[in-house]
Every structure is written in structure tokens, then in C-alpha cells.
Length: 353
Image 1 (cartoon, rainbow, N blue to C red):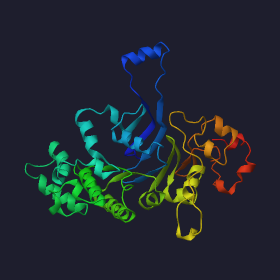
Image 2 (cartoon, rainbow, N blue to C red):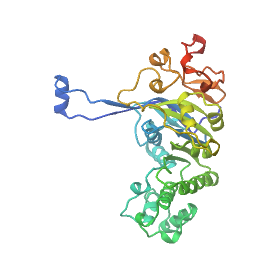
Image 3 (cartoon, rainbow, N blue to C red):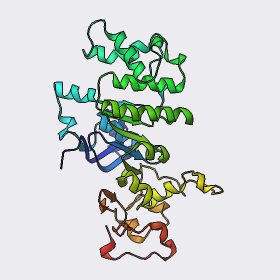
Image 4 (cartoon, rainbow, N blue to C red):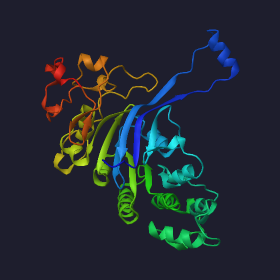
């Protein structure tokens, strides 16, 4: 098998509040409590092949954006490793580290807050390639105009400020800024969530076109399964810092195997479901400070069994290219919604992942 472009290998990310000397002394003396630990990512593994678009889906607070920042090298992993072309990005030094930073770019959710309001577009887009020596002297304006045309903006607007553009135009500026250093891997972190639906479609079509024209690889982070279905080759479902299911896009939508995936798919609005009363997944996502034991989804799962409360399910292969972390994901291909949760019994050893 060929080496994937990106491989996330058992990555864990925890956030701890820093303490000063006085607080550390108070904690040792038993006069203060140790600051809580936020378990943002819990043993996450996934891979992205060159030229692939992987959709990363989950509710707010599940760790999608944190994973994107770890993959981009913006945040260090607490444990585990992120490998690019087989090399751990945390061990890269000098020119290799710089080349990796330039080759991996991220497009943020809110284009207004991610663009410097005091700078003109020509400086926002052209600053990085100029500082890294990617442009000849005096060639910045011409390159910025080319990039603006590439993302569907009028090059005559290079001297405008971000507030003079609409939300969709600002997001296009963010895309142009990311492309300015010639990356081959883009991380789109909820990059259309702040836009109107009609503008979302335009930006998605732009990303699809750029992927083909520039041979880009994408990690597309979103909570909108309808958009992910359109743009992605493969979908990864996350819940409370863990990957619970991963499969080609068609398999995720046609034969979902994890109860959480099924719950998300059940609430996608469709024309053929007129009159259907939509609702969110029952219950609330637990706190990452104190996640549940066993399967993190068991407090909200209609199929939860005793083993789900005690033992974490392993991420196992249920079909070719289809992995699932569920004690009911025994590889039979049976949809969980066909089972009656009131009759669920403890599974046999053969059916336990």
C-alpha cells in the first residue's frame, strides 16, 4: 500500500490551565484543587490519501477543530503523532519544517475575524509569499491579482479593506491567502458555516474546482452532512474526541453502522420526507472534562448495553474500507435501526468488538 499523505497516529490532545508558583504550592498543601483537564482528542487515528477529500463530521465540541489544528501543526499533540508522507511533523527542523508549514494551510470559519481589518487585500494575500521569498521583487500585486481571479474576485479590488467585502467575498479572500504559498493540503475548518446557504454553494463549488485544477488534498471539517456528502470521498464521524466511524461517503449514507451516525443521518432534511418532525440527537454531548466511561455515546444511545458502559469499543473493520467503534458493529452489515432497543441483550463474545 502507498504511504498516505497524512496519517494521524493515536493522537491525544489535552488542555490544562497553567498555574503559577503560589497555586502549585497551594495544590501540594491540599488548599486548592488541581485544574481540570479537557480531553479534546482521545486516541484518534485516521489517514488521508493524496488527492482525497475527507469530511470530518460531528457536533460542536467533539474535537473537530482541535484535530484540524493539530494536523496543521498549530497545536502540539499531547501524545501520538501526525505524519506527513511518513515523517512526524513534530520532528521536522529547518527547511523541512518550513516546507511542511507552507504545504499545509488552513481556512478558518469566520472570515471577518481571520482577516486583519487594518490591512488591504493586496497585503493580506501577498504578505506570506513575499516574506517567504516565493515572489520576485515587485511581483506581489500581479500575483495577488492572479489569485483573486482564481477564486472569483475582481482583481481591481486589491486595495480594498475586508469590511468593504461581503461574507462570501471575505471567505474567498481567505482561500486566496491560503493558496498564495502553493500548498497541496488544505484544512477547511467549518469554512462555510458562517455564510448564507446560497453563498455556501458557491464556495463549495469553488473548492471542488480548485481541488481539480490544483490537485489539492482536503480535510473538510463540518457539521453539515449534506455538504460533506457532496464534496467528500470519505467521511469520518467524531464524537467527544473519538472517531466512531469511517467509510467511503456512499457507505456512510447507505449503510451507517454506528448509532450516532444513524442519528445524524435521520435528521437531514430531504424533499421526500415532508411532514417528518425533525429533532436533535437526544440528550446533550457530555463534558470533555469528565467524559463517560466505556463508550462515550452510551448515555444517549438507544442500543446501550452493560458492556457499553464498562468497555471502550475498538475501532474495527466491519467491511472493506469501513471501520466502526461500536459493540454492535460485528461486521454483519445489519442496520442498527432494524433492531429493537428494548430487546437488546448482552452480546456474545463473537459479537463484541
